[in-house]
Amino acid sequence: MSFSDTLVLIKKTTFIEKRKNRHVKSMNNKKDIRQVCFDQVKDNNDINYIDEGIAIHTDIRELPIEEGSMQIDMVTIVTCSKGKLQIELNTFPHILRHNEILVCLPNDIIDNWMMSLDFEGSILCLSQSKILEQISENDLWQKAFQLAENPIIQVSEDSLEMSKLYGAMLMQKIKMKHTLFHREIIISIVKAALYELLSNVDNNNLITNGKGLMKQRDILFKRFIRLLAQTRVKPRDISWYANQLCVTPKYLSTVCKQASGKTALGWINEYVSLDIRFWLKNSNKTIKEVAHLLKFPNISFFGKYCRTHFGISPTEYRKQLRRQTDKSL
Image (cartoon, rainbow, N blue to C red; front, side, top):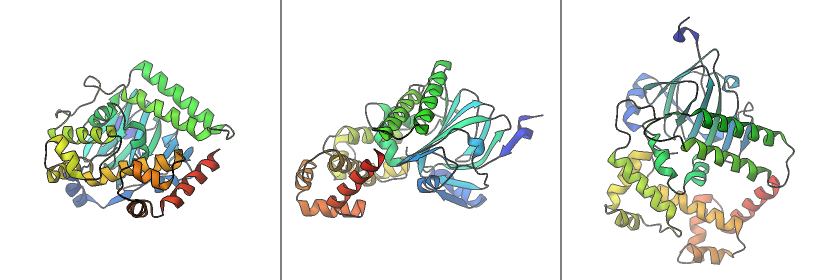
């Protein structure tokens, strides 16, 4: 029996940030594209583990079968330990085989998801904010962004064994009774697994389709994200970043939109929001002190910023964050 005869059509929801706008028009002509967000994944009762920004399932075959195209707003990592998986990603066909990992990025369009009868694999979904928290440091963005054009990674036997160990550790911890730092340990294992994954990303083991690995646009976007991640107190003005990168604010915002589906200001607000979240949750600084630390002109402006991006005041947001922490203990 040929591979195509043994394929079973399934549909699934999957997982940093890239746009596929150049392909959307052709796919829209073909069929309607369903939008799939991380909150929808959280509502799936078949998922093994769900937490804020993280969803894990160890057997993809158990996920519900659906048809049609979908566009995701999360990062999804699919690991193949046996068999084959066929998928169209932004109209390009890909086949995932043993010892390979597929990475789908936000705004990717997925269609014709099919797997062989003997396929075995796991899936990890991360919301955009969660993936930012995990790989926004060091040089990881450079490696992660290469996946935009080359979504399949060949994994070494050693790395595959490490991935299995992380998976086993993760499932064992998930099954254990919740104890002190239960959630933090799970997130640490996930982060270690991401490092292991990205350690396999280089020019030798990316499955290419004949195109260059990165375009100048993508390189500029990567430099912008690295600058944003490495700037301790982040200016909220696009002009500051544009000056550092020797481009105009308009050009920088256009490049960000093309490369990730989000404007430069959108990325700045994403990172500033993460900083606010960190200081409100993990420090005993007053609201005024946090506002001063992050270079807001006054506490009133800081309060308005928080209401715009979190929907509540800084004080209420701090209470909400700490209630979430208490529940996880």
